[in-house]
Amino acid sequence: MTKRGAAVKYERLDFSVMDDQAPACPVGYFKSVYGSAPCSACPSNSRTGQEGSLTCECRSGFYRSATDANSSSCTRML
Image 1 (tube, rainbow, N blue to C red):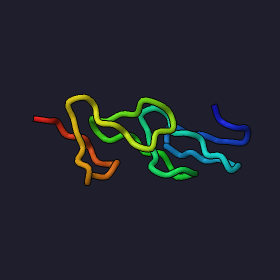
Image 2: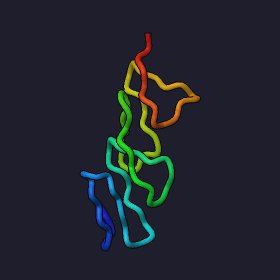
Image 3: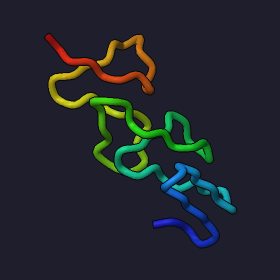
């Protein structure tokens, strides 16, 4: 649910607001900082479980190194 005065355009991932409260990113998208920064789609083989996620978790059988950025794809475990 968005606050009155907010404009949300999912097709372009452009989340703009006219007040102090930025909307949460939808499931499947994340932003690693709070505020009006744009949301990013989860990288390959990862997902979010709820709106407003700061990171995307790797799907079962995949992993991301602790040194990899949140925007890095998850790779298959061998």
